[in-house]
Image (cartoon, rainbow, N blue to C red; front, side):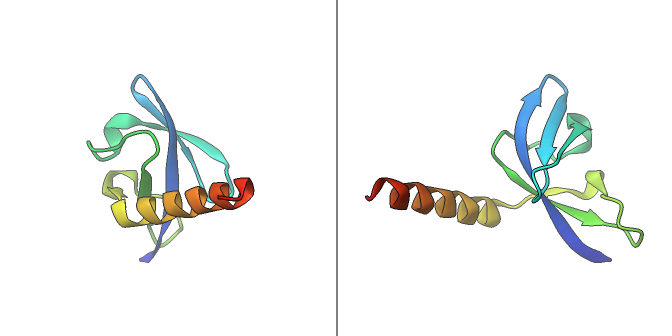
Length: 83
């Protein structure tokens, strides 16, 4: 199995989640193929099969990585405003 790929939940439109990969490329995924706890702003760890295809049904919300990335964004914003 390959290491997971991370996708940020950019938005949820009805029954479709718009995810962004680390290169900020969007992909639309039916919400019912993702964890029930999926919400906007969350970071999903998506396992890849041997061919590199995302296994959406095995996705998990990575709370620790979500927090880490949000803290990085906050620190960057604070540095920009000189806080």
